[in-house]
Image (cartoon, rainbow, N blue to C red; front, side):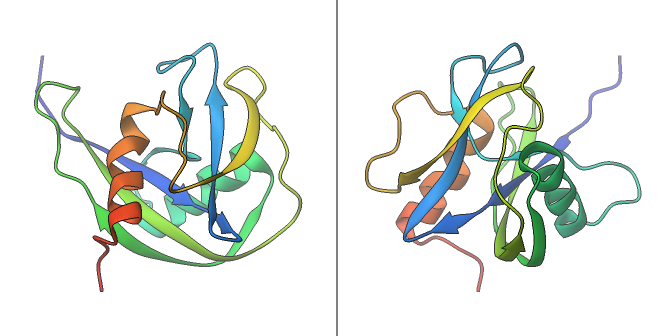
Length: 135
């Protein structure tokens, strides 16, 4: 087995100071709340991957985006690094497009996030909350 680092992308969609999170079901992280996102695919840019995942999961199309944070890979937790991509604008209405993976979408205040956060989103959300973003 070849060891490798996986790259996850997390789409950060904000509204009125709150961030969009989905309740994960029937997949890794079942019962936790996470940002829309997934893995970077061969040939994709980080922004392209985040925008693709956002549209696949929520039906929303990004009209602008930028990379705002990168987390260190966790050697004991699947050796994943996560890239936070802020969605600067969007079109469309948020809906559950993958009901087999996400039960519902809700906006949460960064000061009152749910206790059960998806491992891939937790550090990205902490960086956003603490203002530790790329400039």
